[in-house]
Amino acid sequence: MSTFSTLRHLGCAAGLLLSLATAQAQAQDHASHHAPATAAASPAPAAAPDLALTEGVITRVDARSGKLTIRHGAITHLDMPPMTMVFGLQDAQQAAQFKPGDPVRFRVEDQAGALVITHIQPAS
Image 1 (cartoon, rainbow, N blue to C red):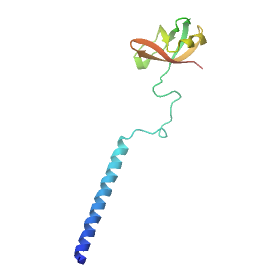
Image 2: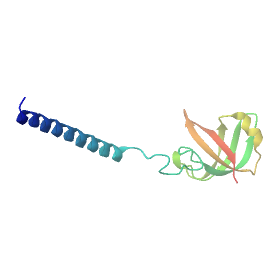
Image 3: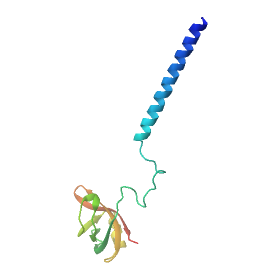
Image 4: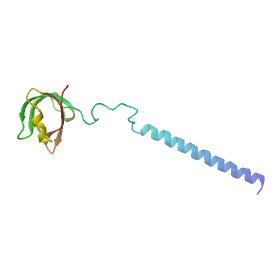
């Protein structure tokens, strides 16, 4: 193989490697613009991101049926204005922990048309 032929092959190989490196760098740059934020980039809120809690005050406890009547603020994820209403507890045993007048923070989910408290805790 002549020196000219060897140089030409080396030049082609170098060009191919440069093209591959450029394509890889562009792909990584593109992916970084669409990658989700990592936990280290933003601190986690006190509750899980999908666990928006609503403040309220218990007005009635029905331990037998596992239901609480709560005067509550707006429940934003359900687009519900402040009002007083009855909610079932996902864990009916929790009803015994509360009494009328207790301030609480809770999460309500629409489960097949029924509004169910999936998380509740005393308000501090």
